[in-house]
Length: 166
Image (tube, rainbow, N blue to C red; front, side):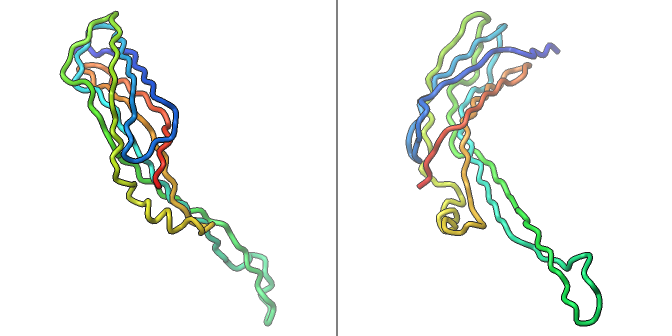
């Protein structure tokens, strides 16, 4: 079986601005095959990474305290950071499926990715924690373009995009 390591070069562009839930991102895609390739699917995904951070202190008895009667034991305080991440596809748009592309012919597509109006799962939690300096939810958005190539490496490109949640 022949496996193509670099079946095509891919790139994409979109307007660098802040988007809102429910907006549409116009994505200009260019696929440049290095040989004849069969494409199962090409798509653009909007990935949301939700990140929870909590800072807190843990106290423990000092190691060098005097164990004599009535003497106070020194307390040592350690700062601890707890972090959790959840990543999922928020919105997706398939712009090409079941197609053959010829070598040397660069092909352009315009994909319209409609950002779903559904807020991230922890958007309400983030609003509640805005005044809490020790805990927070943040959201990182990434636009990912992937091409599923038959018998070849699947090219993938990604860029950060700004999406306002509230």
